[in-house]
Length: 115
Length: 114
Figure (cartoon, chains in turn yellow, green):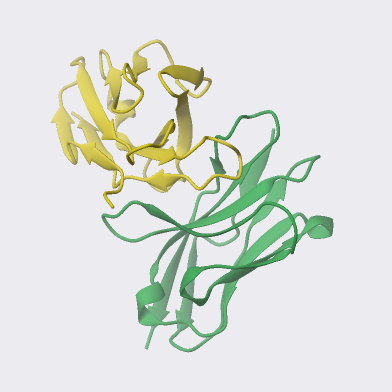
């Protein structure tokens, strides 16, 4: 079946602009995660949704970052007033139940470049 | 702070040689442990995971890892490297009280030479 998809695959924007990154999880998966991977680093947790609600948003770096999942499926990560330091690959993952032993399935990522 | 350490950002082996990628974690309680592989321009793919039970875990593509509590380690091995194993490998943990989010190491890039 279809895996996790993310759009766009690449996004180039200018400092100060607003961007939205979209994630389509595997159908039926209740848990959805966003991670950020900077060059040469491992992915860093941003936020975790269980259904429509954010169960853990402790990884969001500041209030410029916001994510929604209004119908419990597709999620959008929103970044306001982008900064050059926001440049990274943004990864989305989903899992069937969101338990600690569940496998998280990752999408290919969105590469964000802030000029 | 709880963390994951991967020793060696780059590892090079000859085709047919043993692959050993190191992972150590810090935790006062047993974590759940994962190894993911990332091929260029692709998403992370789970190789194997340890949750409970047998400490030697077998995964896909001939990889295996052993959970050693006394050494707080979860090293990844493969007896004979193949050219197709060249990729970036990430060790990750999930800890009690942190819901199910993963904490990743910085990754090890595996190069396989002829």
